[in-house]
Length: 153
Image 1 (spheres, rainbow, N blue to C red):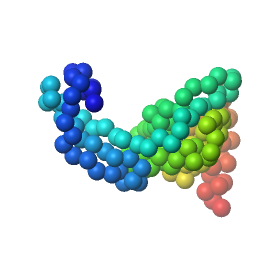
Image 2: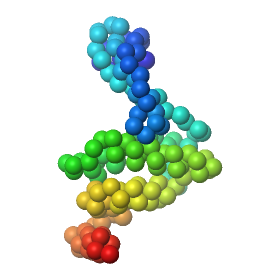
Image 3: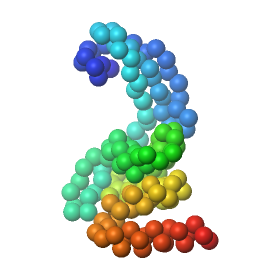
Image 4: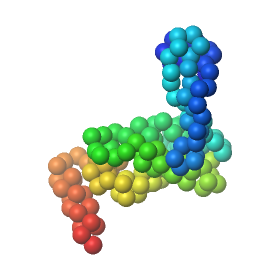
């Protein structure tokens, strides 16, 4: 494994353990070149997945991109990183076990919306503002009102 600090090609595994949800192995490594320590994750990949964008373009499914968009929605919220990782793993597992090699960006966005709805209402609204392309403050008001109504039931 290449060191992210100095680029040296060799590192030594110091500790390995499964993640909380058991979907990956977390490895602590130490670079043999500079001595820096870093963490890597090893995950099962069942098949190559492709995301079909709304404009028709295709790109490979990237777990990191999914994780980054969820993390942005959850920024400055009291949400443990382990809960975010669990949500990302659940969505990835759902996509991989669907039996399809392609998933639309809309389907992926819907899965994220469902997960964030259960996780945190503010993160849910933040993600929805981008996913549903809110253009005016009124869009936020209407969506937040529907979220509040769901919470009152």
